[in-house]
Image (cartoon, chains in turn blue, red):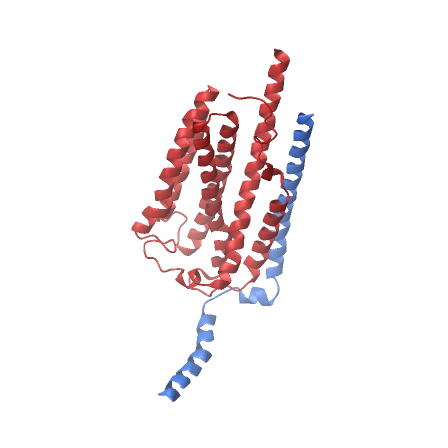
Length: 69
Length: 241
């Protein structure tokens, strides 16, 4: 019984990653490193918008100070 | 309505001008973008790589519910103690919340088009979310149709509470009672594998926090601008006296 279960376990350990590989993912894109292009573009847009938000925040702070005088 | 200094506490809550949580928001969003695209996700049929949309689509709804909740809290505060400041807070939160909700529904339509087969699939949760947004659209129509400041603030505060109370069953109860294709609704086991997936939680929770903070940040900017506007009106009034 122990033998059978250990054989079954080894079989599953070998086969289950193969199952997982059946589902199509963007593996080629990742291997070629092109995913970093996407990451870079997303980061530039995100950081650009956030920088804009920071400057707006500063502008409002300046206005508040001016009004409090 | 009480007037006076609209740009200083207690009118302007001090945490709004703090920088630390804004930096935390930026760090979390950068992590979401990088980790969300690069870290491992479960390999599932149909959704495939689009499972990563979870880090961007779902936080929009978290952000919306948070902002609408804040809006309702200030609506209740207004009704307890009427002040133009509470009205300004309540409206700004509702405004940004509506933007988040619209982004949520648009991203949901894009995602549905590729995984369910059409942008509008008549999914109960999708329909209910659309109804919730329409209820909040009506909030702004109501505000636009009353010219008296005090009446507008009072009516919209009452309506705001109704809108929030109507939204809760629409988003969280009705879709669970019928069969919905949204994961975790109507006994749909679609994403159970990742419901338990700790790899996705590692990105999902920071993503939710980051996006919610971003929504709050934008709302505070609108609030501060409106308070400045109010103060300018006050100064003009004083001049004209």
